[in-house]
Image 1 (spheres, rainbow, N blue to C red):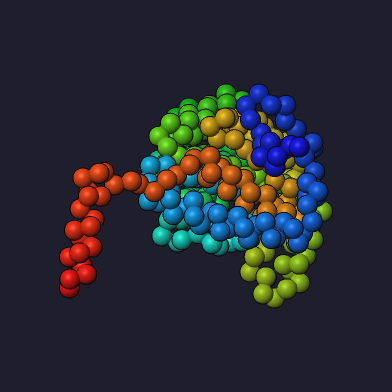
Image 2: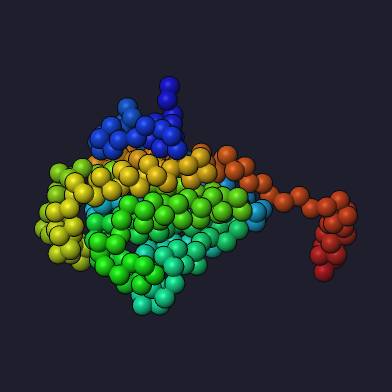
Length: 292
């Protein structure tokens, strides 16, 4: 039986088309079963995180990319709710600031990387520079890159160079102990429409809706093509992509939780073992404390 990791994972060299991934797939799971398993994953994740933090050798970087309303915030909230905040950090990347534009496009993301022993979550990421910036190449002009003075200058070579920069960046992180998991929450256009209508109709969700959501929705087909190209160009053994069906929120959260837990298990973090010289003194310390 194909595992969830194998089924939804995209690696370098694998034939990949987004249309081959159903947005409403649930891999044969029922909601009740998936929610129970997700609760178990949270317990396992908490234990692995404690070991990861104590070992202080590896780190885990989790990247979420998706179209608007695909469920990134909900996935982060429900999957990671059991981890210790001291060992986990979440960054939600918005429009770059003027200071960001004084540096290369990876700069602000490098600053947000998790330290050794920690889990870092990036809600959107450095991939925005080959996604939204490819749909709207005029945004690139703010970077003031030498040789690129007008929109027409952003040719195929420019984007291939960006993919190469991303691959090198992620390969460097992997070599230095950061495990990278990249999730594309794959929602259908029809489901996005329903979620937008829900936000408009619920006064407690109105704040989530923006007119730009409708503007970007008009570019749906372009986004799908660009996501497909970016994923194919940057999926590697060191930093694979996972195409997660997102029409059913419960299944998306289950699948993400399963992949994260299995990946932490493969890291095999362990509690440090004291050297014999230090362990021999533990009895002395115990006696001293008990005599107080």
